[in-house]
Structures are given as C-alpha cells and as structure tokens.
Length: 210
Image (cartoon, rainbow, N blue to C red; front, side):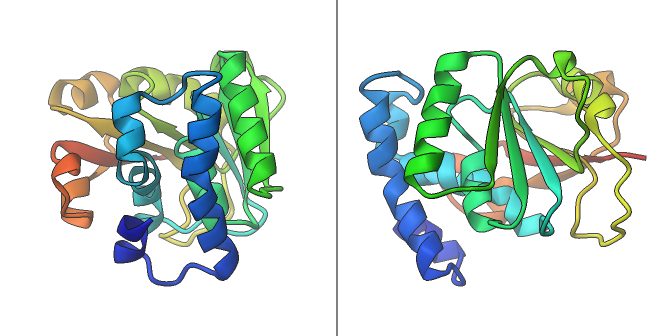
C-alpha cells in the first residue's frame, strides 16, 4: 500500500480501505483459482495495482462514462481504476469464466458497485458501445485496435484528459508492433511516470478514436 501513497496523495478514506483490502482478497482467491503468480503476489501493489493506475496519471474518466476492460484476466486494470473512479461504469470482459468469478467476488467484497462482468470474446460483443476500451498485455496492438474499434462510440466529451479510444499497457520493444498496427498512438514510458525498476521498458499507449 505504501507504494500507492507514494505517488497518489488524494485517496478518500473509502478508497484507502478498498485498496487495502485487495491483496488479502486476491491472496484468498488465488488459493482457489490461480489468477496471479506467487512471485507477483509478493509485489502485488506495484506489479498490479500501481501498474493499472498508470492510466489515471494521464486520463480522467468522467462520471457516467463507460469503460470496457478487454481481456481483464483477474481484474486489471479494471478493478483499481473502478476504485479510483467510483462514478464511472466499468465493464470487464474475458473469455475465461473462472477469472470473472474472481473479479465478481472481489468487486462485491470491496463494495464496488460500478463493475459489471461479461464472459465473452471482444469480437462477439454486438450490442454495446463504450467511451473507452482499456487493456493490459492481452494481444498485439493491431488486434486490440481491430477488436476495439467496433466497440467504441464517438464521445461528445472534448476534454484532453477524457479518453475516447483504446488505452493499453504494454511492455518490450514496440517499434514493429506499432508499425504493423497502422496506429499512431500516444506513448508514455511508465518508468518516467513512476521511477521504479519494475517499470523499465513498460509503456502506456493511447490510440484515439476518430
């Protein structure tokens, strides 16, 4: 928890309580359904929670906007962002149902009323559109953008901090991946935002929907 408070100083008492509950909740569920490696659990707040919150350093999700977490796995980045933006609606989607069971139970235990889950592949979702799609290390940018575009609605909000497009957290050399995607994303080096060794060669990307 200390690593979160090192970089974020304006959490409410409720948010502090919710963030504080997460590690114990994930520890408990990890014993039943393995969603996080043991090594990562030892560094839970920096590897998962702070990494997810990178998005919040550049963007501010507005009340009543809708965010889809594509391939949410065990709930990252969706759950930490849902804590930070309690008036924003988060729709967490994954093709592996047992991971969504963990997400549902942890969201309920933490008192998060702004999370819904859906067992589906992104390309199978036909009846919903979202202001923003977020994702963490799920697939190449080309695929993420291909899946995301049909799910995005043109948002009327014109605030630079209010994203309307795809936001993803990725690692490694992205030169070829970006080139092959035909996207022109904004790119931030995460270790410039959070100067921690873990974030070397990790990036935040934003491809606006136009």
